[in-house]
Length: 228
Image: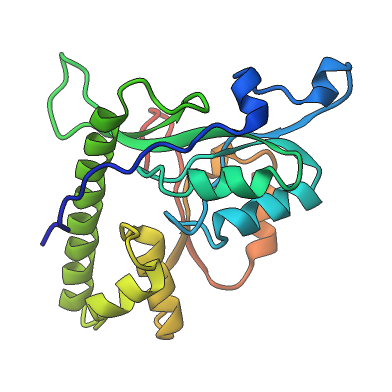
């Protein structure tokens, strides 16, 4: 069943540095120095492995000066990321990766899944409550999708308990495909593996050869441009 709907939490308070300007460029850029950006990252508030604090620390060790946390369909990790970033001199661009469907007006069908990276200022989105409500509806849909995946696996005689998946996802985190996959791994269940979209890789031949054992199939383009 969908989770109970609570009131939208307040957006993160801007830091003292952000109070002066909403410019996302740190001081190094103003002086003409090189600045390393990371504008697409996930924490354990969606399908990442690290907490927002640990993610910021990892980014700092790798020389990142501007980091955007873009968890799937939630802004819950932003306040923690902003707090952690202040200790390392990292500029945080608050963001979110929104799950959407592209459905052309002239087309028919369920639509094509599209993920939209959205960024906003340090004072939060201008229509925060409306955005929060929309993201909550999307997360409810993620729960239903995971439930359907579990039912399909059970029909294949792969028994996984819902409580096991939610434990891996963590409290308050909308379950997704990765959490189901982690549950399979923890339980020692191995399914056929595929490479999806090898044409998008810079060096697909090397990647495919390096995988070697365990590869059961590969998605390819046909000459007519369709996908097998």
